[in-house]
Image (tube, rainbow, N blue to C red; front, top):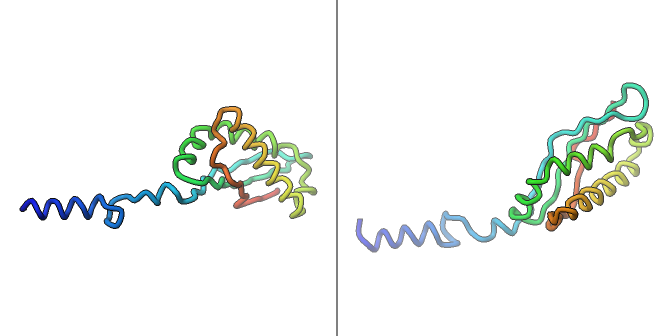
Length: 129
């Protein structure tokens, strides 16, 4: 293979327009899913299973936040446990709970300097039994 062909191949693979990685990938938002949470609710045999995803502003911040998953899960379990199941059935109460969860997770991550990039928190599944 001639030098010009090698140079052309190198330019195609490592240029932003080629098949190589571009800087834009680090600027996109990331949805970071958490493992399902299962907690006891107030009363006998009432449970909440919630799937939650965090909206992070880029991959770099997502990696930093990922390192604190045990802290995030603990914070959410403490917030969600022993809630009144009848109250959680109302959409406005679930929205208040979502906002409280975002605030609690942000506060917990701030203690360890890792809250930068966390934009939002979403319940992607919310089952009360």
